[in-house]
Amino acid sequence: YDAVMVLVEAMQKADSAEPEKYLPVLRATDLNGVTGHISFDEKGDIKGGAVTLYRVAKGQWAALDTHGSLAPLRAMPGKP
Image 1 (cartoon, rainbow, N blue to C red):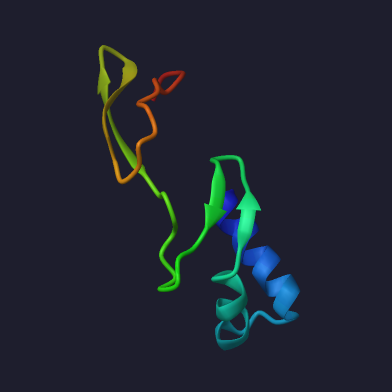
Image 2 (image 1 turned 90 degrees about the horizontal axis):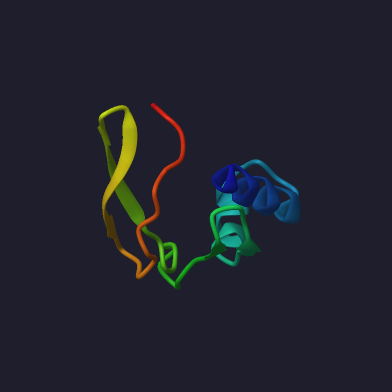
């Protein structure tokens, strides 16, 4: 959801769906999304990005580890 919202916002601001026009605008994104604050560094990499690895144990999602950010592990609600 957040990835699409970032793209849509950049395309709207650039008034174009052409990558050469919206990518420079996308790098200037500063958005509070559903997953958290989204912004990019000078190389275009997301700042503070994180990936959490999960596994299913006894029908429940269990967080294994989070890489890339200091965000705490959170249990994933629901069943797979």
